[in-house]
Length: 168
Image (cartoon, rainbow, N blue to C red; front, side):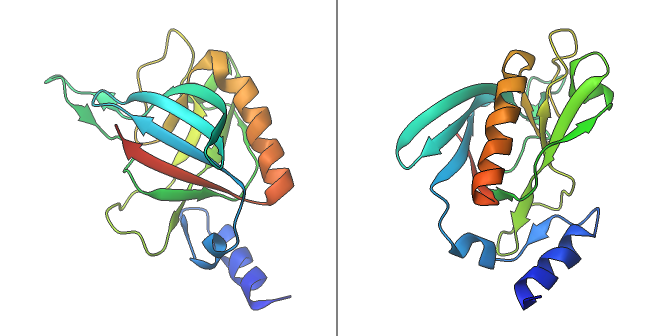
């Protein structure tokens, strides 16, 4: 077992730890996700191949407080996905009642500016619950199933997927 795979196993076994070493960014992955959101937290998550957009998904981060300001939005930094999606029964992550999924976002060790852990991409709970997330990326329910299949296919093909997050 190489030093890098031992390090990966150590990090994967820690449930609340989401920082990943810089070595994972050194190998180039031809596809990436780009999430661009506006001042209200709404945006698009694009699956990119170089400069070409392969697909777009409507999504949201954070929520609006009583003063009309965006709070708890995902920080505009670079992340990476290393694992395929997993099923969940958590209420806010449903595509349909009782059926949901989530994917963990890992933060690059060299990035400063966030103390959050357990950052995820997941469905935003459907039409009646679509009230935002607490720092995650919430995919609208109509796009959630196709996005999950595309993402899992990318992880199967490349083993990881960079995620670039920025404000519009």
